[in-house]
Length: 59
Ligand code: SF4
Image: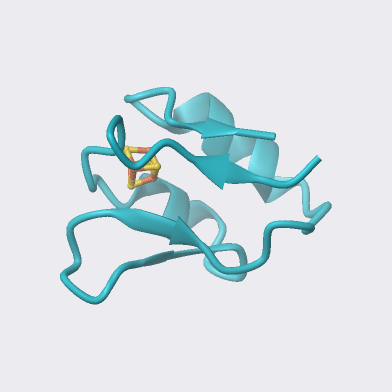
């Protein structure tokens, strides 16, 4: 399953980017996170899912 962010829900806290910088990055405006590696199996992805205050990350 590909990792996805609900961009409507994302509040741009950057938590996922801090936890998992190889998978998530902020968009050009720095307002929303985007997935740059949707097929990552890195353990930090689950941490990011669990930490997202908007529950915006899924896979
Ligand atoms: S942790 Fe959630 S709300 Fe925060 S930037 Fe990432 S996807 Fe957006």
